[in-house]
Image 1 (cartoon, rainbow, N blue to C red):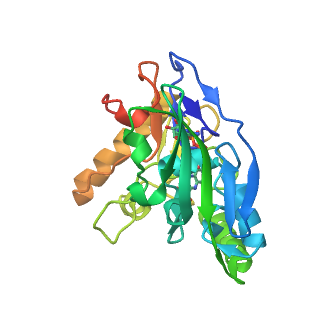
Image 2 (image 1 turned 60 degrees about the horizontal axis):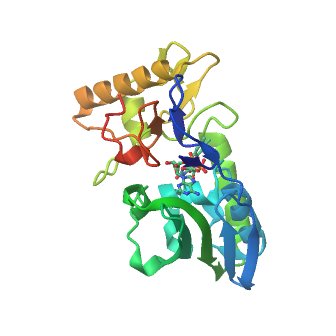
Length: 256
Ligand SMILES: Cc1cc2nc3c(=O)[nH]c(=O)nc-3n(C[C@H](O)[C@H](O)[C@H](O)COP(=O)(O)OP(=O)(O)OC[C@H]3O[C@@H](n4cnc5c(N)ncnc54)[C@H](O)[C@@H]3O)c2cc1C
């Protein structure tokens, strides 16, 4: 299994029975003034800040996301009405047979927190991503505003894997709001706690085990379903010792 920063993963305390590759492909090159080709291990946050500072729009939201370009592409990361898929031009991958392939964005289907890579049998790794960006004089200012908003509304500095659940589809309401309305802010199981600042962030307050976190996830799902009839779906990836191969999403074992 290849990981970027592991910022969207919940690893079981028993570990993973296989090889975990930490991605350090960290180059960035300007192909043309508005086209960036970036190694998949490059820090996504850094890319967002750099592009915005250089007067390009599309990746302002990346400021404050603690992952890599490869992880963000695999997850179709997004925030503030932007998502990475909107500005991708092409993606270079390595297949399980060791072949390089360049895929055009126009041939790939992305949707909310979902990419074709989550379902791709022959994917070994995303190697590099090419972005085509548009000029915007206000990008830098916007990037600062988004980051400030994040500082106020999220438990920045606490240990978490970001949003635990995806926002329910076809509903106006966010997962965080449902959890908050169910009265679960501050709710604890062992060392795992629903953040008091943002109810969709579950934080490790010191000594959380993976089981604490999984129990809290299960409990919140149950309570939200009981109260509102909504089945929340995990965004966070649970990696356990019996995961087979690269893709936790394809592992049919339920998360909890
Ligand atoms: C404080 C905080 C805030 C966050 N805010 C947001 C947000 O606003 N929006 C959002 O969408 N997410 C957010 N996240 C979640 C997470 O940071 C993103 O999903 C991020 O893009 C994941 O990147 P990563 O490199 O850490 O991926 P990892 O967690 O390392 O991996 C995630 C998945 O991608 C796969 N993967 C990673 N790299 C590659 C590669 N090169 N090739 C093939 N597969 C690969 C892994 O195998 C795994 O299945 C947040 C997380 C935290 C902790």
